[in-house]
Structure formats: structure tokens, C-alpha cells
Length: 201
Image (cartoon, rainbow, N blue to C red; front, side, top):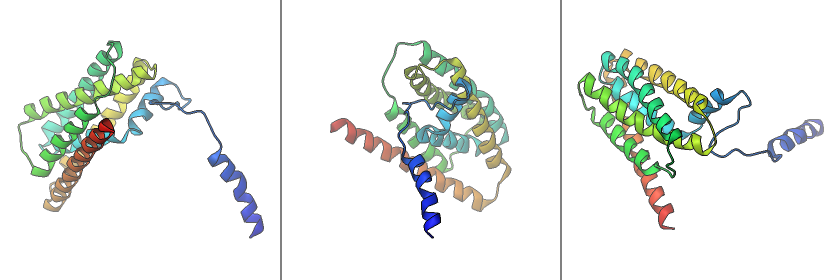
């Protein structure tokens, strides 16, 4: 028992030892491409918004899902490039939270739209998220290679989720997706409340 307790000491020291912190962009040590990829994977709100967008478009059918996989990464990349070269600063967290409310609400209501309209929605929402992401990358002195890493994750997430959604048509599965949409909308509403409270304090 004493020997096992002594073996835990180095582990606890390693866990609680101070290390260098990196604001906004995670330094993976593998280069800017992987730093950009990890940035999206470790940004919960952006990831939830992207997943909700994929749910919404995937529910519109296979054709809309295929358009999403093409349109969303392109819109994300173009908006991210604009953010990288612009002189704008600040946060669009409230806009992203509002986007999540709309997307989650659409999923919860089971809204059906045509594939071209779904592709346009993917372009708009993907562009909003990409612009915010580009501002964060520029604030962290990242370049377009990190943006490409982020877009690669966008492509993977949209492809996997939309393919999963379009491949299952069972009623129970659709009900689960609508519940997830309501949770996403509630998350966006909670985020707006938190942003408002932070701004007023």
C-alpha cells in the first residue's frame, strides 16, 4: 500500500507542475496545421455549432448533405482568410450563440427545406463561424496553414455527421436528433445569457 502511494507522487507532481500556457491556439508541437486542427477540436462552442449545422443539413437528405460537405469548408476557409487579412478585432461570440439558437431550433422543429436553400444556410453559417475562427487565429499570430488545418477538421466533422444522419431514417433516431437540436438551441440561449451577464458586470 505504501509503495503504491509513493508511486503516485511523481504522477501528481507531473499533473500539477506549471507549464507554458497558450492563449487561443494550442501549440501541439506538430506544426501550424495540427495547431489549427486542435484549435477547433478544443473550442466547444464552434464544434457544437458545426455539429448542429451538420445535423440540420443532414436531415434534409443525401443531396443536401453532399452540398454541405462542399460548401461549408469552402465558406469557412474564405471567411477565415478575410478575417486573417482584415484589421478587425473583437469577439462575435453573441453572433455565434445566436447562430446556434437558430440551427438548434431548426433541427428541433424538423424544418424541411430544399437542398439549395440548405446549401445557402451552410454557406452563411459556415462563413460566420469561419470568420470568428480566423480572428482567433490572427490574434494568436497563426497563418493560413493553421486555417487549412481547421478546415480539414470542418470537412471531417461535416462528412461524418451528415453521413450518419442521412443513413438512418428510423423515427426513433429522428426524435433523438430533434432532442439534440433543442439542447443545442438551449446551449446557445444560455451562452447569450452568460455573455450578457459578463458584459454588464
